[in-house]
Amino acid sequence: MIQIQTKLKVNDNSGIKIGQCIKIYKSKVGKIGDTILISAKKLRLNQKKKVKIIKVNKPLGTRIFGPITSEFRKQKNFKILSLSSNIL
Image (cartoon, rainbow, N blue to C red; front, side, top):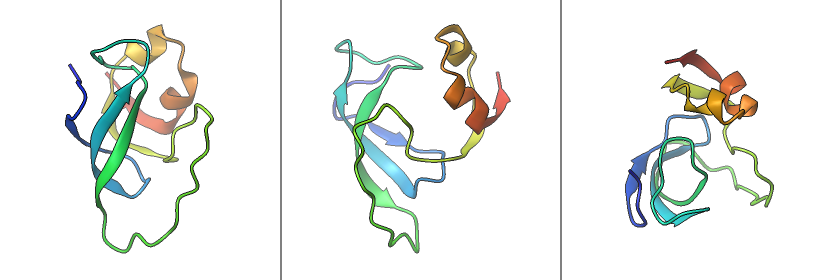
């Protein structure tokens, strides 16, 4: 369960280590597989690349570290499925 102001660990190569939830789209409480907007609170070392904000429904990272759940398959979110190495 994700609410506004929840701190989250990010497991991709976007350069963000810890983020904080700002907005949850489509409901007041987020679940696995929901789209949320986060603010970067802590960056990984040597992260000096400027990030251009694009208002398209695409993830910022190009790889996902660790397993993801099969909820993404039920929602037909194949972009996330192809980025991950393991599916639970």
